[in-house]
Length: 265
Image (tube, rainbow, N blue to C red; front, side, top):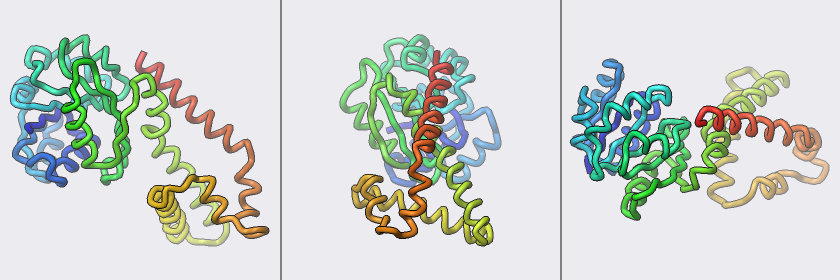
C-alpha cells in the first residue's frame, strides 16, 4: 500500500509516525509534501519517508491519499489535485469542518472518507472517528481502521454526528487540560509545590482513564467504589456533584458543537 500525505503538521506527523512505527505501511511507501521545507526535512529525517514537492505526482503514485492541510487551505489543494485523482485513490480527509459533499464537489466519483482525529494521536493515544463516503467498500473501511488504529482508538459514526464528535473528542483534550489545571492550582492552594501537584493530578487523571477503560466500569461505578461513608471523597463530592458543574460542561460542549456547525456551513 502506497500512502501519500499532503500536509506536514502535528496531525500529519502523528499519522506518519503511527503507520510507520506500527509497520502498517513501510517508510519507503510513504510520500509526504508540506508547504514548509522545515517540516518536510523533519518528517524525512525522523521517519525515513520520501518527500515529493508536487501534489499531483504524489497523488498519482499513491493508493491512499491523506489530506492533512488546514481547513482554510483545503479547497486550493483539492482544486490542484483534482486532475490527478482517480477512482484508484482512496482519499481520507482529516481537515476539520469540511463535509464529504464539499470535498466531493472537487473530486467527483472518488472514494472519500472523513476523519476527525484529536491531538493525543501525537503520543499514540488518539481518538479518531470516521465516516465512509459513497462508493467506498468494506475493504476501504478495513484499510481506514488499520491505518487509524496505528495511533489510537477508532470509531465509526454518521457524518451528521461530527459536530458532536468535534466538541467531545476533538476539542475535549483542551477541556480536560483546563480542568486538570484547576486541580493543580487547588493542590498548590493546599500547600503542595507545583511540581508535586502536577505529578499527582496528571497521573491521577491518566490512571483513572486507564482504570475505566481496562476494567470496563462506568464513571458512576468508579465514584461509588472510591466513596466511603462519611469519608474524604464523599465530602468532596458534595461540592463537585453540584448540578452547576453539569450545566457548565453541557454549555461548553454545546458552544463547541455550534461553532463546528458554523465553520462547516
